[in-house]
Each structure stands twice: as structure tokens, then as C-alpha cells.
Length: 490
Image: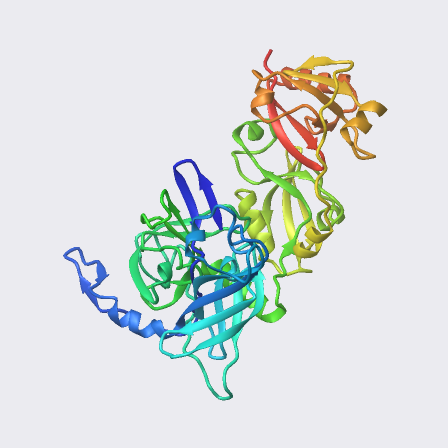
């Protein structure tokens, strides 16, 4: 993972990392503070116990052009300095190498690391802590969504490897302030140990299934894929990224929680791929202004359904405008939580989903599909071209037109989609602030279909008469629908 921003850099630790899973029972010696709180007097015993299960990973890749480590890191990445480029001939293919970390999770040689450590590699070599040899590794499966990869080395018959086990990364077992220990291959320097505390939990960086533990234990490039241990020697996270202005550790590191990793690893071991549940809806978070416009909703909770394409939710009778407030017996606080809950549910399971519809709760029975299969079948969203001004009507800071055949063709509006075309948006209006742009199509207002200017005007007047401060609009841009609320005060 490599993300940049002005004066700050969120850096994936591409030089090495490893996941360690196995059974470790010995904890470091403890001493009591005057307040009666325990703290480790040394991490030596713990480090000695788990080190044999931590590995260094070296990858090798053939690069067609001599323009940087393509296929391993993005162009311009700070990791380029850590790659050794060996050109075969001027301007021709070359070999590029990278380092990372990992950990052994079973006696028969399964190893966990980050996907970005081994992505695109032609050859993967595993260096063990206490062995004088490197062994080649085979990729069993990868999951780019969580940046996890599962490898395996082939062992001589009868030989077993030391391994570590995953621990509980939940808030009850891994609290903010708890001691943790990181191991890996920082900056290619070999096996290293660092210690710190859990600084924060449940961090989201950029992925749908993100659940990162934040730590101040020193993590640097090359630690990627390495384990984050609790004091019982259990892996509660896989070191993945740091936040840094200079590419080095400043005490803000992130490890994907074991709660996420264990599910991914189990599926990669069994199927060689992930198999996540799929509800079949497009959703968005409920903002304060949306909550104010939705009848019967108390607070910014739930996931607002913006579209229901062909799939499990449609079969169960779910509609655009429903707010999902409970899934399989669990309250839904936002879209991120719902996506994780659905993804962690077995394919084919029938679950109860409670939605808020027009101020009333309804219970739907949904049989989940498979997300990976559904995503592979979805075409890329079409981009809407700019619309020409024609037959404009001004309302809510928008220049609107009913859909004519000419506009429908110009904007690429799919057959069967009805609504009002946005021709222009006042840049000083709330509508512009909320993201409405020329070319958008308004298909619903107040959760009622609109096909004529009169339909929208009537819904705005009704909202004003009922004393509502805003009106809920369903807007489509290409094939992507979303709800937003616009103020209706005169």
C-alpha cells in the first residue's frame, strides 16, 4: 500500500513482513508498579520464544522496462531506493528484488505475509531465523482487499517448523494501552524486535474491510507482513503500513487485526481465494442532513440503500431508500460495519435484515450470494458527458430539464432510467457543496419517482408544508446512485 498527501505519507512496508501463527504460552517477566499495574521488565523471553516462527522474505521480479520497480511498487514510491536493479542489456528486461517479513502459522510450512510484499514476484525465497538456508515458497492465495497473502514452503518428509498462533484482537482482549511487540526485517537489516503499546483500534485507511490496530512500536519499511504480538506471544495483527512525513517510523504504525486476517487465511487455505457474502445493494452512510430528511430515523445510524440491482436483496424485496438498521441480529451503525458483517457471513446463508421504510420497520429474509462472483460481473460505470443547456428550469440551485430523447442519448442514460437531468449547478449553492454536477440525473425526491419538473416541485412544496428542513434526492451519475439531502427553506 502506498498513499501520499501533502506533508504526510502513508507508507506500505514493502521491504519485508510475515504473519506468525502458532502456540506460544510463555510471557515476559512482569513487575508491579506502585499502582498495581503490570508491565514487562523485559521482552527477552518472549522474543526468544517466538523468533523461530518469524521469517524474512526476498522476492525477485522481471521488469520489462527500466523505469522503476513496476509491478512491485507504484512509480515514484519511496521504496524504489531499496530495490536492486540488474539489467540484462541496455533498455531490456531486468531483475528487481525486494525484501519483506512474514510468519509461520503451521508446522507444515504455511506462512502469512502482506500481498504487496509478493505481488508480481517470479520467485519468493524464505529465510528462517535459525536455519542456514533459504527455501522457495509457493503462493497459495492472496487477498488484495486486506493486503494478505498465504505462502507455503515444501519441507523434507517428517520435518516440522516452529509456528505461532493468532490471538484475540477484540477490544476486550487487546485494549488501547496494552503492550505489544513487533518483529520483522526493517530496512533489510534482518530479524529485529521493537515494542510499544496499542495506540488506537479499528482504524480505517483505504480498504473496504480495514480494521487496523495502531501502535507506536517501531515499524519501518521491510516490516510489512511481520507479526504484532501480545504479551502471550499470540499474533494480534499483521504489520502493514506507517504514517510518516519522511518514510521512516515516527510512532504511527498500522497492523491489520487478527480478527480480519484469520478469516482470510482460513479461506485461502481451504479454497485458495476468498469467498465473502454478498447482499447485492449499493449503500451510503447516513449524514445528519440525510437523517433529518428520512422519516422515523433517529440519529445517523444504519446504511442507506441507494440502489438494488439484480441480486439477493432484490429477490428479498429490498428497495432504494430503505435504511438497513439490523443485519443477522446485529445493529448496523454505518456502511463500513455492514460491509464487514456481510463479508464475514457464509455464502448461501439466509439472514434477517431489518430496514426502515417510510417510517416503519420491515424484516426481510435475504439469502446471501458471493461478492467475488458479483463483482466480476459488474461493468465499469459509464461517465456522463456534459449536458447542453436546453429548456432550463431553476430550482434548489439547479438548472433542470426533463429527459428528452436527445438528452438521454447525450448523457448516456440507460434505458428504463427516468428522471430530471441536471444541466447546471450554481457553484454558490448547497447543491454544489453536496456534490451535484451537470450531467447528474435526479430520479427520486422525497422517496417518490420524479419524471417531470412538476413532480419535483410538488415534493419540495410538501416538504416545506410539513416543516421539514430538507428533501431527500436520489441522484444517478452514470450507473452510480447515491442519496443526498438539499435544504428546502425559501
